[in-house]
Image 1 (cartoon, helix red, strand yellow):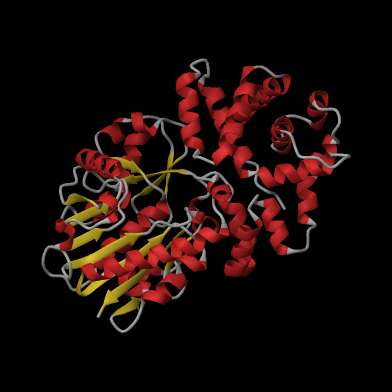
Image 2 (cartoon, one colour):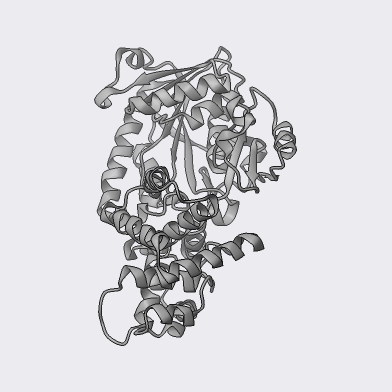
Length: 457
């Protein structure tokens, strides 16, 4: 069993550069010191690694492009592989003691095959580094599923147990997929042009792409580049968005197209955030109708408005839910919405590829509070629906307690589950089981998302 080398897919030249930088880290110096400093800061509160990196790169101007990539992947690697690294170090120690951060860094570089065990031994001689290097084989020999998942995918025991209970035979494959790097994916803005036109434009800029397998607006970017500096981005032809997230927007847009609404539709995105799905739905609908994007975070709504201007979205308006309270503008929509999207606050387990630190921030006790909040939000969302209107409950988690259990608690005589085939037609094949939409990294190559469409009777 391979536990997921984070650099396994890098081109040969990149890997050669990484080996040189890893050798410098083993020797010591300011790159090693900075990696260890940020690792220690990250562990203090398990804040977003992206934020730590952004601050460091602004401050440490001596870090070049190769160093930035190596630095980022090494810090992410320590977060993603913490339990695997600690298990490896436990194999190499002769006495019981806590692992040291320098040992963790060296162990990661050994497991990633960027330095040899003998090189690590020159830095820390008291460990058996050949034993450290053999940890994956040892993990593979573990017969019990939950401990094997927990170590191989570096998950808390409670999360490994949840995945095993909810996903059965697929749990291990899913857990390992959640622990790999996510691809760089963009959405072609249909208000500007289709995916083919975007791919051609990027190809002219020598940026290689491959089309997404599940969504006709998704392009996976193969070349390493600054997306946000490209002309295609600045003129609104594309947005960075995971393919699974794009599919969720399609589910919402299809609720309008397959529904009974004959007038210009009213769509409410009740937890809109910075508007990724709002903009995608608006583009799918060709700016037809009206989309009300609501959120408690005023800064995110301001970002949504900026993105909408760049994308040419004219059908969306924002509503700030200050303190979580509904303003008059939203109260006025009670009983009028054709579609309500609730992309609910959740544990984010389906997005661990992008936010790996979340596993260490969460506790199992948090799930109960999240599920209660999700049910509360759905209760409010239901009040917005017109008769026959559709409610899309969506999360980026893959845990039953936040998905099917929440839906089971809110459906009833006045709100019924709608089969995915009724919404998406033939496209529903392969995008879930039963009534619900479910995509995962091991099946679809996307982040993990769940959605259930319901209809007000």
